[in-house]
Image (cartoon, rainbow, N blue to C red; front, side, top):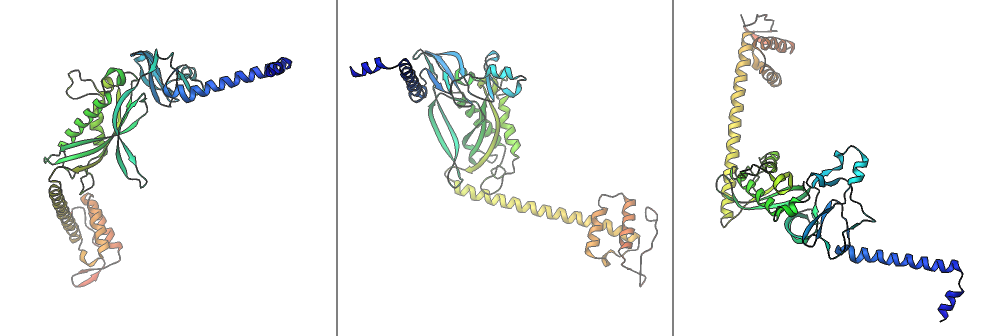
Length: 377
């Protein structure tokens, strides 16, 4: 009763202030309710996340609406929902028109429960670093409403593959994957990512089958495989999936593009792992020793040829090369290697004459002053 009397005796300004304040408080409570309760559960609104697309459903059917908050990418509905970059557009008004509209980070979904956000189960592996910087593989298996449209790093494991020698191997590799279509990976295929993973493993299996354990970077050596070679083999899937009669690739069929691929590590597996590793190590060491011996023999051969060629030219000029310092001789042998014959002779005359050393000829020490024509005649 007293409160009613107080309100009646208030001035118009005070009454208006109370009403406006009450409305503002009510709006703030509603906004807080949306932010804390409704939007996190995708009821009426959803909280957009940068570079993550969600799909609005009518019942169990796709409504045709994709919500993609992003400053770099957009979904082109007129081009079969392809994901494109704003950098490819020439005008700011085009970018403004294609950007997903929101209010304070809130995106309108629709009247619940008739409209909702699609969720799906996805399983994948990803690399995780501990406090010491050591990377380990983390298994993810969860329900998610998102399609991550930026390049994302996925870990993959080929178990019990075989190298060219039939050695059983586990191969750990990384794929950087990006959707190029907002619809095909979600509604165009059943478990599109799972299919991408299967195709990548098959491609890696065929690649490993042609290599040896040591060349792949086994536990006893650094990899001899060009990183671009491995990436190129896996990325071929983008344009053509082996065995498909229509010759179509990953991008067209599954809506994903492999941006890059990296071979991380290879390890021997199976019951006889220790024995096989020791055998592989012994084989690798023997191979490296053989390469060293071959290289040494080839080097000795080339050095002998150079010395013979140099001594022949020096002999024509009456120069005893052995009387000169090792540095001068070495420089001489190295320089004549790729010279025409006439230039070799001129170089010999210049080098040994300018050295101010003498040569033993006919029992006397004299400075070489031989002036021979080309060919030594």
